[in-house]
Every structure is written in C-alpha cells, then in structure tokens.
Image (cartoon, rainbow, N blue to C red; front, side):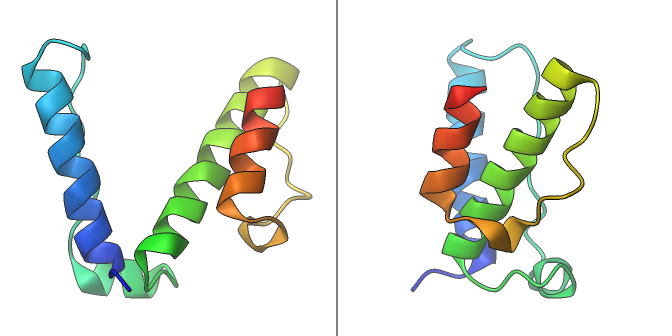
Length: 89
C-alpha cells in the first residue's frame, strides 16, 4: 500500500513532466508533507485519489449548477464512482 505522501509525489512528478512537455499552461504541486495529509485524515494513496476525485466533482458541479453539492461527503462514494459521476456532469 502506498502512502498519501508517496502518491502525491507520483502525481507531482507526472504533472511536472506534462508541464515540461508543454501540455499544461500552469504549474501546481500537491503537498508532500506526511503531517499535512494526516491532518486531512488522508493516510493512503487510495484515500488521496478519492479525495482528489471528490474535489474535482464538487468544483465541476459548482461550475455547472452554481451551487456546491454540500450534501455530499468524500466517504459517500469510491474513487471510481466519483470519477464516473464527474464524467456524467
């Protein structure tokens, strides 16, 4: 099982590579401090992926409907379900 910090490092490396290749117009990085993720209640890479999928869903929902779906919680669905729901927006 991969830690949230290790998964964040993987995601950052992938984003940095896409940015260096000119595939993105902005640069960002996820925090890689284990304490930061622990404070967020995220321990594993799987939990981080689910959190990121949830956040993408919430932000996209807000853009489309002008309201955040505050009735949802990250625990309500799996990573795959959040991604599928995002695709259906």
